Length: 155
Image (cartoon, rainbow, N blue to C red; front, side, top):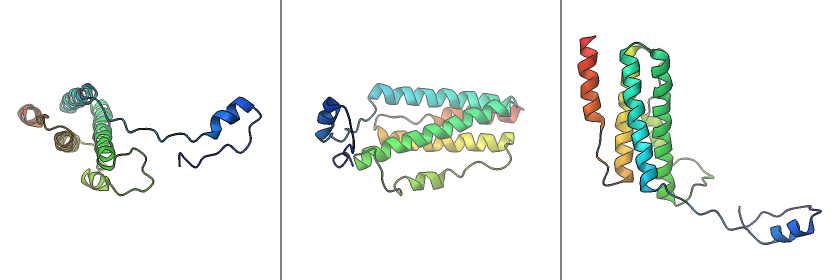
């Protein structure tokens, strides 16, 4: 793709000359450790907030935050796929479809119980994917799950 592109018509001679040489394919840039840590911290902050909003009965904000958790799971899945394939240009699908299948997309009814189940699935998937990204990653869902169970039983 990057080597085969040519400009068909250009009136600017300097631009035409510049575009005559092939452009190198963009290099794959993986997230730095600090960028990965920022993604992790952001995910777990939103997981706590989504849990609190769900338990307080604020399903609108809880759903909004839960959808963001799902997006973060997908972003981490794409980052892992890029690292595995060595590129972020994917002309063919397939790789990563198992992650989509494991999501069990949201139910038609967003009850408190279903939102908590979905938050739990997102946390479980995120922990599994983050552990694949970094051997230093320590799963974080157990403490939050225990807190959710305790607070949920009190309501």
